[in-house]
Image (tube, rainbow, N blue to C red):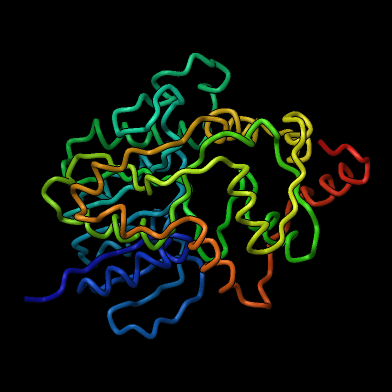
Amino acid sequence: MSSRKALVLGGTGAMGVYLVPELASLGYDVHVVSLDRVVSDNPRVSHATADAKDIDCLKELLRTPFDAIVDFMLYSTEQFRERYDLLLGNTAHYIFLSSYRVYDGSQVPITEDTPRLLDASDDREFLATDDYALTKARQEDILTDSRYGNWTIVRPAITYSKLRFQLVTLEAHVVVARALRGLPVVLPGEALPVQATMSWAGDVAGMMSRLLFHPSAYRERFTLATAEHHPWGEIAEFYNDIIGLECVWADTEDYLSILGGSKAARYQLAYDRLFERIVDNSKVLRVSGRNQAEFMPLRRGLEKELTALPKDTTWRDSGGVWERMDEYLRGGRRH
């Protein structure tokens, strides 16, 4: 019997770099499409450099039949509405990447039945936006309301991997890059005691890969996460132990000003990072056959990934965050 063929759209990112070899190890022939130029040394993996978000490009890709599609692309709601029929109509199993950010903060621990912000929030200004948490929930609804039954929605928690390292709402190009230059980062003191869940991408890939073609995965939603959780203050200590990161805990409004004062940054902080994010992952463990004891502990996983960073790593521009952070620190406004 020939191998199943899997198409991974946007498969060179934080989760894709672990999912693609995982699928190959399970016997899939994997075709990866992204904007990155990658050459694989795995005979089961092929790469194409293309914009899979372009609908004409997508139609051309899907001239070749694929048994499974794993979709890491970031669409607007309207873009997804224009493409979902094309995607679901040309595969046996479609994995849609949502996010645990769809959940509101009303329930601890989080389960797949926790209310979504889209359904529960009374913040009209927020609901009028296309914030990431709302966009993903609206796209989930497109799948749920469709005539198709061959989809699975996955909602990963914060996932760290390779060049993806988070601390509250900061990303690696600030957190790690500044630490490696001996510079502190500023964080909101309000987040210090708040519980957070961060999962290693290798574990997330293992869960996701085992949902493919599982009879209990169709038309279902799964939170992909470890059950391990820590306060943001303790996670900051992990970064300090591993790469010497110094953290300065500041007033929330000062922190948001450093980030540029955008609504998106405010919503991410208020409607995710300041929620108690503790996950009940029993549903995905049951269906995927994984065991919590197999998962990478956070402290060890961060050390594994951070110590593997190439010495010549280049970092994307911080959009002025570095400059505003330095200005704040020079002003002596330390808390």
